[in-house]
Length: 353
Image (cartoon, rainbow, N blue to C red; front, side, top):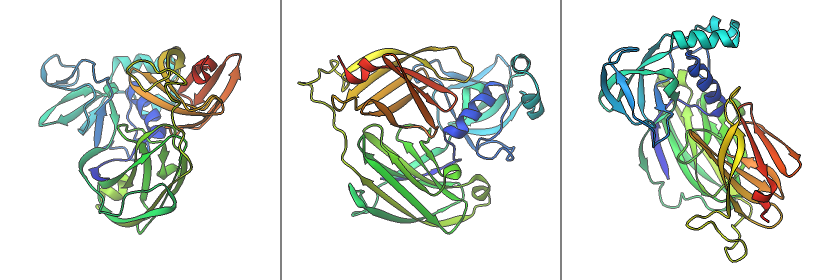
């Protein structure tokens, strides 16, 4: 599958900074902080079951012009105001930044499905705006083979293309890109997420990633913002291949499933999701692939989900662009992804018993 969209590229490396700066009431675009006019689109970062977000008549007003879903997408940015200055953010101590951000919150004027109003910036995060999906021509479907599929296409301006790939846990996904415009990159994104597990603009034009969980993955080809806003075009060639033997779930007859789910076990585990946040608990579930400690772990919290592949008891792959490190202490593995995520995973959850 391929889909075209109107976008601004963003992934976790940018979203971490984006979230923190928005939470403190300051906006600096994640990919290139020198581009001070902000993203083209936001998404609301609330949980789907949460309360709707009010569109206010003006910043801080009680008058409501309408509402949008707590997880709304394609929210057009009409401009933001308030919050901390860049100098404040870089020079003030943390407690003073929090005080000033609370006293002068960041507000953004947005447009959503014909409605226009103001929303507090802490509810928003930069994200692309997908449009229609189209099917790749016959013969262009990706097969599990060391021989790459080659796709040639063209993008212009804010348009981008998503290529949907079905992959299994434990397989290796290889992607490489060549293009006529040097501002052309690709991201690798789990379908249904806007958080990239590979970001081309920071990591290059070649990716080799082990797949952490069964599912669809998107290879998103795009132009960087400056080139997109100049309506530049790019012809590109994308090479994609899948290799390796997938890890299949253990049969229910050998390892009983939690009723009504594909998981072999569920648990509540200690976790830390945001920088400087208090430690909390996340919901974890596991699909075991073998008795040697190979398993796919799914961790969920209020605003996100993470998948981690364990191979022989060790975290090996995850659907995040952040670098990871782990230690084993007693009867659990402590996994850290970047500076914002920490998970404490009991051995018994991964191995059973």
